Amino acid sequence: MNLRVPPAVERLADRLHPKLTPFEQVRGRHTLVVKRIEADTWQRGGGGVRERLRRILDGTKPFPVRIDGVDYFADPPDGRGPVVYLSVESEGIRQLHRRLCREFPVVDDLEGENYVPHVTLARGGSVADAERVAETAIDPVEWTAERALTWDREHREAVDRFRLRG
Image (cartoon, rainbow, N blue to C red; front, side, top):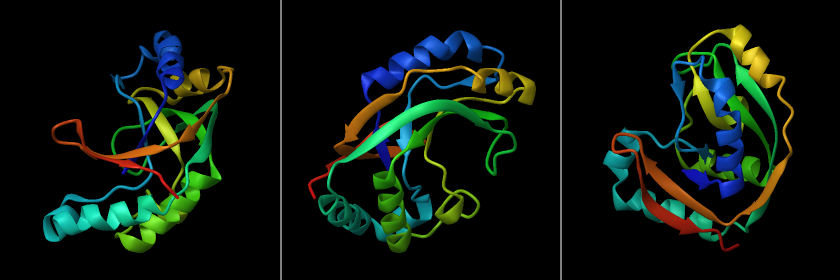
């Protein structure tokens, strides 16, 4: 389950792109993962998963989100590192993540107490390059999260869209 990021975040990622060229993968699309729901949960739960998500999201009020810096995971628990990302501050995201973790299985090492809200920019390369990018000062980007979506990793597209109603 992801949150859409506003165009200002895409513009920020575009401005940072020249600093990201040393990395093996640079993201072209940017979203903010709030909770991973594994394929086996979808397969077992079918339409019931969507309804459970809809119930939680319908009860979630829109909330503020702030991107305020660049950071990195030197040794991420999943995939190649380092991972360079935009740091996200939002108590609303953390609360939503906790509610979703009570409803759906937690992905070990990535979620629950280990969850760090972020927008991935690039991955694979050297920690020294990640450190250099992380030193970049940025102007904060703030917005109100009003919509969520489910993302199909295999087909790389949004599947379901939800409005936060509260």
